[in-house]
Length: 94
Image 1 (cartoon, rainbow, N blue to C red):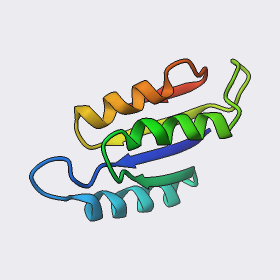
Image 2: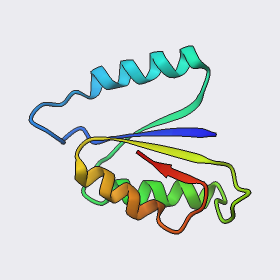
Image 3: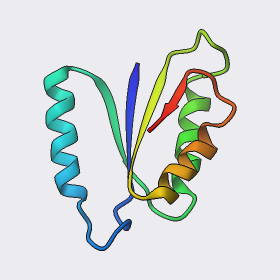
Image 4: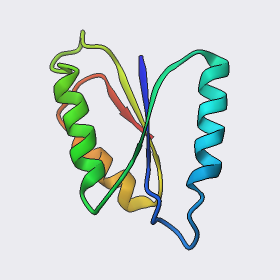
């Protein structure tokens, strides 16, 4: 399973990206998981990113490799991620 962390640096009152970045890297390295960190660049970017990853991974059936996306931002970021993942099997968003 591959893990994707989608960070929205403009969500909230203060940018906490560096804190999350260190925490994610330290934890993922310690656990030995396959991961990628992505910073959104504009509105709609989380949707585009998730959809692109799912398409490139060939996530078209229930036997596809599982992909797990974690949104670090607000409800808008997670909503975009859910929209991008819609219709792809073996994709989880949290």
